[in-house]
Image (cartoon, rainbow, N blue to C red; front, top):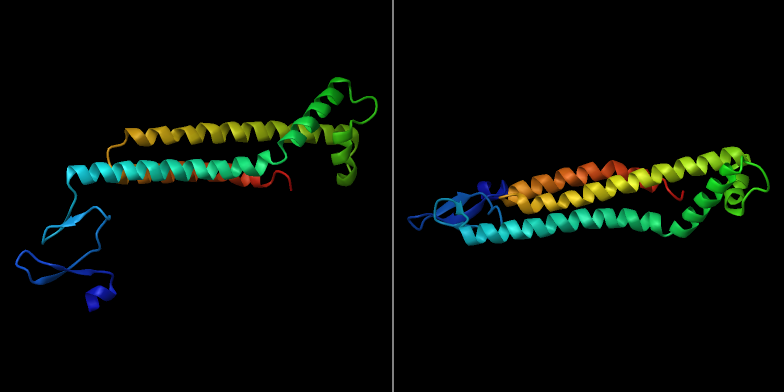
Length: 173
């Protein structure tokens, strides 16, 4: 019982007597009476499952970020377009409606609001580009040889995505 309390499993030994073993590393590992084994077919299946799971984790993470931003995408594009045109016109004339929609409640002047909008738009594009680049790294998973390598690389890619997600969480707030 002490071994089970430590997370071990009772398995039949080679002589048929019970032995304590670690939990199976995966649902495909087979007990041979001494240790957990993985035949080639099971290893291939485990690798395929890891690739699918890693790819899904990466895609779903980036998809969530994109959804956060794209819900107001037409508004962001129009605001950027109007800010670009206003700046190109030397910040003269009537403040465009989308620039004013930001400037007035933020307590900013037309020029300052325009520059903020354009800076935010540029930052958003850079962040979205980086997310796209990182998402494509999921293709590296298909070149790895073991499920453990895939899991490790998928976790590295997810970790690299995280800071960009934090930047996008600021959009629209």
